[in-house]
Structures are given as structure tokens and as C-alpha cells.
Image 1 (cartoon, rainbow, N blue to C red):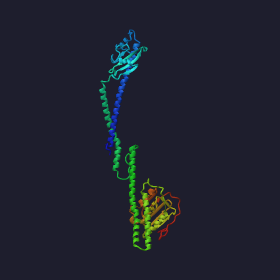
Image 2 (image 1 turned 30 degrees about the horizontal axis):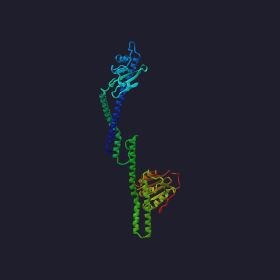
Image 3 (image 1 turned 90 degrees about the vertical axis):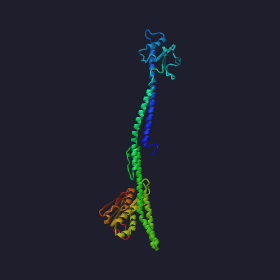
Length: 444
């Protein structure tokens, strides 16, 4: 959490600062515009008055004075009706060059409108009588549009407007801050309350930054959940799969230590070597299953001869088969191949066939061709109500998901069947029976 407060507080402060800056800017702008407006209106007024005065001087009516000075003096006493109305006769004072009361500073200005900044006086200089003389029109600083008396009221009005705008902006900012922060607060609450497993957080459908953040959290939680699931599966599968070769290895080691007969020792060493090979393949398979789809290297492919793998496994399971007096019927295509990550093909066949041998009552049927593997067996009466066959089928399902294969298993009455479709089936191929020592080719 930041030391600057919550997200809502920071948003409110940002809105408040923005409102204060905006109020100050617009207040200064209004003040400058009012000054400019006063200057503009005064110049327009002075220009119109001088224009009317020039017309009266250059085109006097009957009975008007002939002297230029007298004509100018008559302007204030009897203003022309065409000139703009003046607030008072002393607002605009007119002079010509010969006027004895013409301010000395006015003589230094040329034609045009001028403002003296020391006292605020405005001067309009216009040539008259074809340039033979000059008319000077002077407006004092407290003349036509004097707003000095209104200054405090204008300033107070601006301050009140600024305070009102700032307060209103603060209230709007608080509401907007709450609305903007609500999706983040909701998302934070959901993330903190989330336990485990994939979940789509609220706001994922939004198209803004909050939606992107929600989708990012959803993807992250999904990846973490997948990682935890793979880690658990790795632990369970390793315990399940390595238990048998480790037990074989330990029993063979005990036989090796206890016996001195060369034949027995050779057989024990062979079993230990086979167990080591099995454990190496299992570790490779489990590591392949533990990798995420992004980490998996799909170029690392191993070819598994299905017929050879079934033959090898049945040879090792032959003592258990004979002990249970199982009949095994095989229809296996010699050209059937599995292409998967190293170790996954043998592990899949091993789990399916070991489960069938472990849970079969009297018979097992194995069918395999270039596109699928099917294993069916009957179930002992006491196993018909069982709902699980251990981790074997979970491992098979995980391998099929990893490879994109189709896996299905079902139990109908006293029959249990498992099927793996590992690629599109080709045309029907010739089948052959595999022989297991001590049993017939078709039934065992």
C-alpha cells in the first residue's frame, strides 16, 4: 500500500488540484478579458466621439464660429447630435494646437489612439482641415468606463465562483474516484479471497485497463493452478509408478546378497538392470508430464513399438498371469506405433495392461492397430462396485491430454474396457497373435 493513501484518496486529491488549477486559470482569464474589454470599448467610444467632432469642426452649420479654437470649445457646450452620447460634458476634452490649455505631453504624440500608463489617460490624435491642424481628444483615467469602484466586488465574485467550482469539482471527483476505484477494489477482494483452482475474475469482459488487469490475473492464476496440479500429479505418479521397480530392485538386491549361486545372482542382476531401466524411463515420462505446454518440446519424439511393448510387459507379468489363471486374447498389429515424448508410450501401455491384469477375473482381450489400443477384461464380483482403479488410469488420462490423444474407459456389468486413439486409424491391417511362454497364442 502506498504512503500517499488509497487509490480513491489519490484520485480525489488529483481532481481537487485539477479543479483549483482550472479555477485559477479561468479566473485570471476572466480578469484579463475584462481589462481588455474595457480597453476595447473605451477606444471604440473615443474613436466614434472624435469622428463626430471632426465632422462638426470641418463642416460647421450656419452661425457657427469661424475660429478653430472657438469651434473646439463649442463641442463640449453643444455636442453634435450625431455623436455618441457621453456620460458627461467633461468626459472627453478637445484641444487643437492653438488651445492654451493643451497639455504639454499631448504635443509629443502622433495620429492615433494612445494610453498613458502613469495616470491611465487615453489620448486620441486626429488631423483635421486637410492636415493643417490637429484635434486632440483626452479622456482621463477615471473617465467613461471607470471600474475601480467595482474592483472589490468583481474580485469577491470571482473568489466565490472559484470556491463553488472547486467544491463542486471535489464532490464530482469523490464520486468519480469511487466509481473508478470500485472495479480495482472488487478485483483486489476477489484475488485476496481466491484459494486455488482456475477462476475468471470480475471485469475480464471490460475493454479498458481494468479488463486487461483482470484477464492478466485470471491467466496468472490459471497458470499457477496448472503448475500446482502438475506438481501434485508428479508426486502421486512418482510414488505410484516408482514403487514397483524400487520394490523389485530391493528384493533382487536382497537375493543377490543372500545367494551365492551364479544362476540366481545373474537373474537378480538382470532384474535389477531391468528395474533401473524402468525407473529411468519413468522419470523421463514424469518429467515430460510435469512440464507446461509452453515448456514442452514437441520435437523430442520417441517411437514406441506397441506389439514389442505389449510382448515385453506380458513376459514380465507372466508369473502373475499364470497365478491368476487368466486367459489373454491378443489381436495386435505388428506395425502399430506410438509417437510421443520419451517414456510416455511404454508408461501408458504399462498402466493399462497392469490394471487389466490386476483387476481381471478370468480373461483379458488386447486389440491394437496403427491408430488405437483397446484393452478389455472381466471384473471380479467384489470389484464391480469399486469406483477407482488407482492412479494408473489418471496417468493414462494425463498422457493422452498431453499428447492430444483420445482416451475413454467404461464399465458395463462385468466388463471393463479402456480405449486410446493415438492417431487417425488407417486401413485395416493384418493382425498377429503374440505368444507368452506357458500359454496358447489366442487364449491364456
